[in-house]
Length: 571
Image (cartoon, rainbow, N blue to C red; front, side, top):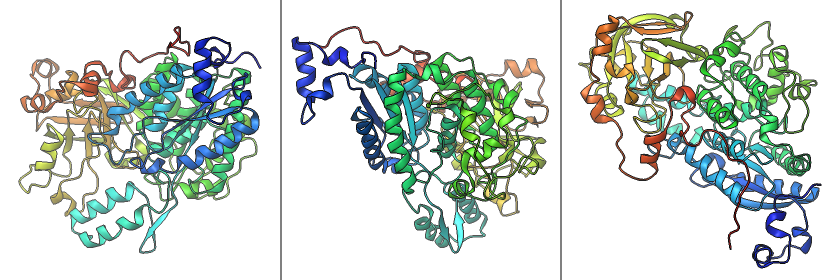
């Protein structure tokens, strides 16, 4: 093995080397400092990130594999983001978590890193950090929870929260029954069991090549996850010896494969903003147009909530990601490699579908053309996206009057009013919810429907927002509208009563107002008054430097990488 990076700290007889070794001994043998690779385990375990609370156990098995292969494992707690707990939105801190993790990896005497994540923003943040510091890195996803049931029916966490809460508002489910389901929703440790953002990003991380093949999607309580964690510990030692870094693994073909996988699994729209951000750290020129070009005609093969009926435990039972991607292997880049150093497609060779109702074959897909659609028009000059697999087919071409909400507070105050001037053909528009405006681009785009329409039997409407929606959500929702209203985007100039045309097959979203008139309208004063104006701290840094959703909503000074070099000694 060539000289390790950590030897810059530990080798030699001078005072600095003495300090570095002495403070780290604490029971370690002398051989720990004699060229053995030092490997950080970047661990997002936290009681306040309940989906990741079991990662301490996963870390122990990673450690065993590292020791066995001759490395020295080092637990490194890093910033953890709990999607369900953090206000105003966990997305506000994705870039901070990535920045903090990157700096800790660079600053410490380590030669490689095993990344432990699960909850929505933790996997993207870890991959962004690893890409920017560019030390050998491999990810272990924490895995989905087991399926809970209520009154004999499987519950999809997130998706069934939205569904059941709307039924309460519609008057078809009692509040008592709704609250009774709460104790059944989360059955075990692990992240959401629907094809939400956590499941999506775990599977896409494997499609990118950043995960030991066959690991993503193993349920969190399954002992096979611990066995894979042990294998991953062994693998990182090999990766260091081979100098197998993210910049050598994650190439344009890797992102091509992730986009194909995103469509085939019916993954979360949040993957778009995360993949763009990861690519930006690597200098790969990924664009919104690539998602449409590569993924639009890929069939949806996974029958999972919110686009279908099953849950992640079923996907694993039915053959997992490998079974899905073997069906579309001809669409994958055959040269893209994974963390093993071999072509990713080789890991699919022996895959089989064990339940064809969960994982469909290509000739009988859930939908023939299921990828993310990228929309443009005078409402979204820089683009917007929609997930056709989660939308209502009859609304993919639609024209309706705009009903405008200038903030989330405005939405909550008026959506249930019997006096709201709205009908089933109206287009609900929520603005001021982009990266700068909220701040942080929250998951509010899947607006609740007006109560009076729910009670008439309406269950979907066209909705438009510059924010995001949960990967567990469903509906005909145009989101990530760019430029956002807070950045002067045209969404801020809409008025209630304007006629909006949505044409997903033609990739258009527009307002039917003469362009000169529309361009000269001032933004809504109520919108401007509701925008975020932080005066200090991370929020101010974020609002002052965040880029648009169309390029990944990273901070402008974090795009790219700095490598692993540290030029100065600490003493």
